[in-house]
Length: 408
Image 1: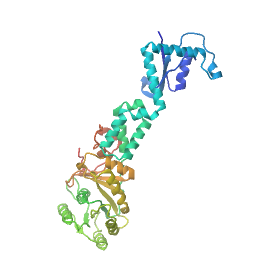
Image 2 (image 1 turned 135 degrees about the vertical axis):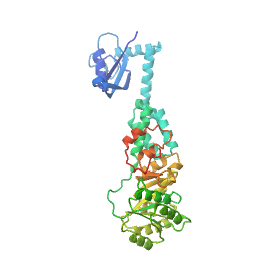
Image 3 (image 1 turned 30 degrees about the vertical axis):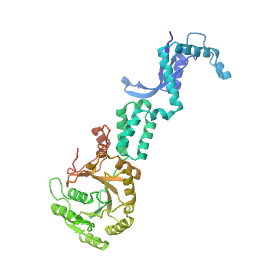
Image 4 (image 1 turned 120 degrees about the vertical axis):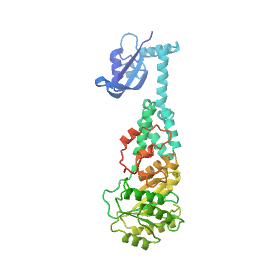
């Protein structure tokens, strides 16, 4: 009965050397695969290695080291005889040899078409499906899949739990979090711009409450609210209502000079000035230009932040980010995360444009439904992924003010 050898080593050359030392140069390697070698004390230090196998040649006179094949380029007679025996054993239905030959054919196909095996792997298909249902842009999806093919071996792809954990880490690494300056020139001026209906006024109120009042209801900073959205019905009244509840002064202005004067009159003793702007379509370039000129009255130290609804389509997000570029906004505030089960549209678009995220809102309640942005908060909103929150929070730690509580 035909017997077979199996040898493992760190490299293919070393494995071949082991085989030839034990069985002579007539030994034919018919199967090669990547394996995990256990080294060190108790095998606690695994590393990648190579395993080779094939039929053990029958005892006969060994070939000289310089074989006929090395001299003439042709296979020696006894090697041809060995191949004939192997094929004969396969034709007799030797089950072990049939398995070896089947694996050899699979390896040959993978070597001839290196991307095909990975393309068909269930883990890649499942990750791609998850990225698709979360509305990640096509370019972002392709980037993740290409990275998977590059960094995961076929054996590693078989462990889907570890694969998706690593993919979530990659997604988290693509989320840029806005880092506020430690020292601000007083008063700190923050203006929110963005399309109509994204919740800028409510977000202004949430920021005012969280900046100016601590979790015990004590006033810790002096806040001034300003709106230039005096033309939209109810806009001024809405912000004034919030200002009365919070007991912060509120002003409505209509032009550059009035805004500049209002800021100057309220600078002494004020910590933060929050400015609510007119909601504009990103396609209305004339109106956007007029609002940009008005906001120039805030001075060069003013911070502009772009408010963006999480329910916006990926293609529209990219257009909004582009059209508001003239405002030189420092970060993006994602609003209405509670109105969608997907966050891939936001993550993908911001990553593609290289924009950072400062705050996330998740409802209409003031002041609770807002928090400083974190990668974890977006990752746990991804559908289809098994989320290990403890592990993700270790990977992407964040510090939140107490009143900006967690939603989950």
